[in-house]
Length: 319
Figure (cartoon, rainbow, N blue to C red):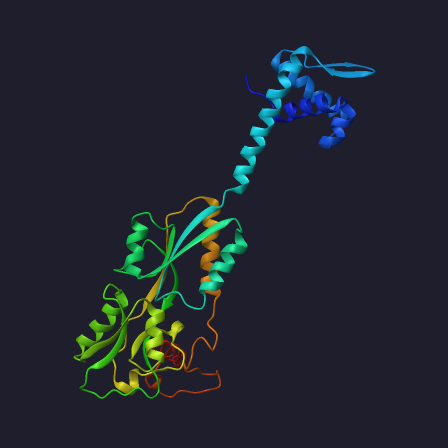
């Protein structure tokens, strides 16, 4: 036997208030609806629970026995509903340190606005570490740099890299280039050193940072040169590829990895992707990155030092 919770609620209200009219008012219903629910409950249990006369409403003997268990049933039901409402869903998000920049607060604000009951656990780490954690099921989603031609993620944006240093940073050809970079496990470091080795430029790592934020601080302080995405230029630095004769760095892509399939989580992922794509770094965030107005003419695209802007200028020059 299963009982209708609304019918049990109607029974308890009538029993406690000794009136169908007052029970209807308390439940925001009508006297007729309360009568129908009570009749349905009595038919279900096969017992008369309420005795009703034109002048009196009272519990039957069986109703008096049933009243306290009915109250307990309703209390348990309310606790169950409250527990569901109180559950905060958990979203484990990984963001690669060389990917996340000024848009991270936007991402988190969008997720919170989309679902205030969402508990967001953010992990910042190298791409390789995040991909490994994602593959082990420790993360629900990860925003990382494409690694090893991996194709199971959603591309969020292209990623262009350049060499950056302060305007007064000194480097002479033939001398080891003083580098600031992340830990050896960082894939960006491998790209940087591999590119220099390929063209025979000696280098020495004078600053080992735990994440791109620390590396950016070292480069901004003039301690060394470093390679950064055009979106994450350290403040007070300039692009120095042409100035120091440094080789171009290969472009990549930013990917969103996720195995979530339920509708609510997919909505959160769409919000995440839209926030990332829509974000545009401010001029302050881009530091000294050169910009070109549409009225400016560049005769030779190769003279543009910023590789990301160089690509744009080349495309415009072909029109």
